[in-house]
Image (cartoon, rainbow, N blue to C red):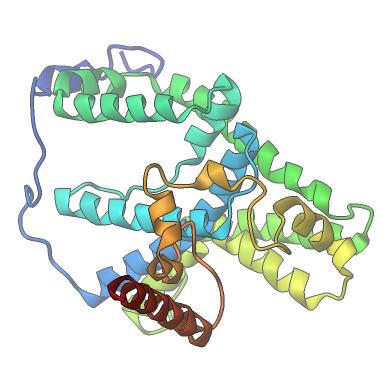
Length: 313
């Protein structure tokens, strides 16, 4: 009965699950706020946001779409933040962010349709209210889940490593930056996990923040790679910057296929009004100084006023 491959080891979970239950905000009591918890969750959110950016690019590559523009990345991080707030109100144990395993599922199933994701989300909401159906998924044996994760993580890892075709892998500089950042990104979080009380700065809040940051593989490896890549001399061609700019069309300031990342129904309305140029999540968002954006809005009002005067005359 103790074998983790058996399907009946978690049957009590299915038996004790209610048939129907609707979650609601504040079901576990009023939320409490402490400085330690706020800073700890903030550190985890920053690490998760950095990881999500990589997930967006991996999802675009597996879906056959162009690299996401800046406004799409901003919108994704914003929606994840809103999802985490809603999850906190409902008292869930974790936030709502992008999940690498789901991106790996795109590579396995070859299905990247938004309709499939939308219908799947509705089913998940339905199963969340039907406890028995949720209990069925909980009873899936751990070895099966482990095998699924191995395949999905392999897909995500391969997609991430495939971006190295932009850089010159014959360069000893790039090989050192890649190898050292990967090695430290795996070793430091593992060491923190084995020694949870090793960070002792004399401040409990600081210890918690540093421990959370150093426990995130993506943050540790990405930060070390960023630091080495920008401190060790190398040409733009050697670092892959020229090929990356050509691929993502950064020089022109727009995505190759902007319609892929436009919002449904309201994109034309947002592009027509200059106010949305201030919003980093808007498809019409334009980078630039606040002074230039102020002149854009002022000229818009002048044009509208002159149009009204001409109509009256």
